[in-house]
Length: 445
Image (cartoon, rainbow, N blue to C red; front, side, top):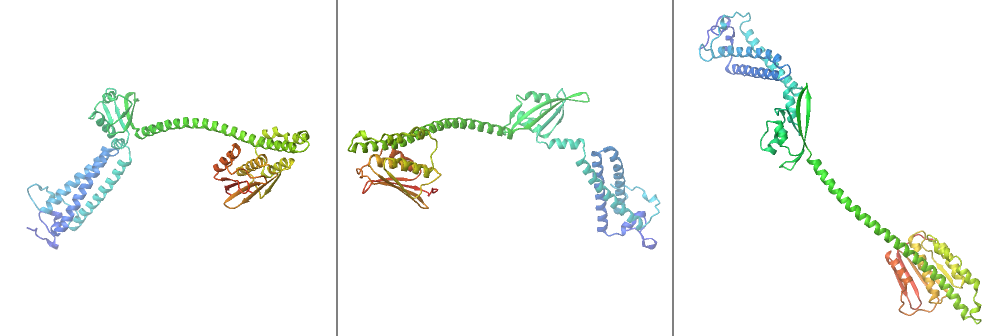
């Protein structure tokens, strides 16, 4: 049943000043109802956030008054829209009120007020929530402590727990099967400062006594040391391995020292063998020539023997090897004293280990040619290519037997050549020759 229309087409009757709502279509009145519900919800949240924020009660009281006013307005709107005289929404007698604004002015003012209160409620909710999230309060402190990965527990000396975060409660449950309500009892259950939990993690518990405003408190903290524990164990294993490697290196160093000494002694022996063998070969050749002379052994040139023996000790004590050019000049002079000509065709390798090796081989080859082959001419031919260095030593003495038995000198040269990847060949026919092929051209003298 609709209210009767007065002059000017406006509704009058039970609705009073807000009876203009009767002329609105149902969807519009439903939209106003939703706006009113949203306004009440926003104001309620604003009151709750104000209560839990800073200065909670002082800020929550005005919001409570605003919420009460909105509830009264919702009752007024509900009675007007539903047009009831009895039931859940009782009449409040607003018709006796005399409001200066009538008709549509009061209606739009009511809607504008709802919009303002809704916007104000939303703004207050956002502001109070930001204050709670960024400010310091009991709730924010509890949330911050619960977010810690470490366990924290504060209690009184009698064991009453004042604060226990979520991590400490989880540790209590894993270690004892339930949450402990006495900090002292839980501390007594800890048999060690470092505990391994069933999930394999390692935790270190530490306790401290605090005095706050002359009141004693107990602080119990738990720190996760799983990664540090594993790193420590790994470091301990690596230290053991390093200690073992150190012992092995010490043993290897001792072996290397022994090998170095043996190699140096072998080098000295080989040097003495080469030098003494050369001098003895020259002396024997001189004595043999003197004995073959028609005048007999009394005609031995003692000045020649003195010249051959001079400088023998100095040469044995000398350190290092002379250059290839100096070596060949000395060798030619020494063999030239007894009438043996040593001729070189092509340069020897210079300034490298290969040069020293070739010099030793030339000395050994010339000495053997004079001692065993009774040669008067020794020819050393050296050929350098991009791939190898080749040397051939021949003499004008009679050829040896087909099967040449290698002694210490020739055998030692063969081992040295083969150790460097080369090859040594002994040719007996048609003329004795010693051939050496070494990889790499080397540096020319």
